[in-house]
Length: 185
Image (cartoon, rainbow, N blue to C red; front, side, top):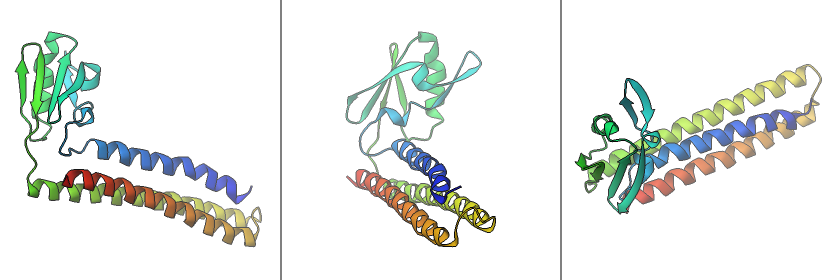
């Protein structure tokens, strides 16, 4: 077994970590409305739990407004109840067969809290990347002890692995900084 195979096994996992962080950051409210703020809110309808995106059309008619149009009128109560529990600071308003959410202006304190939350999510992602690096490194060392990887290749593998980790850490930093910039606008 070559060390490149071990590294190639870990790369998709690191991609998943970066993609997961990107998805989590999309759910964090910035100054503008975004469907991702509510699309994964779990609603209780007919005794079952569904993500909002399966129960309604979500659109942005204005920069600070989200419009939710349920597929069926009977979903409205469950959707409103779920939205009130999310803690987004927005109050859903029922307007005939639709639900409107007008996002309140962001306070400086709220921006700081969001910035802290982004930093926490970045750190969790970095920890996941480190765990994948450690797992790959342990496997490389085991293969070296079993004489399946040469000693010279072991050190090449360590350098290459660290290069990949640095690349993903930069992605994590870039995603976080981009989101922090959006929040400060």
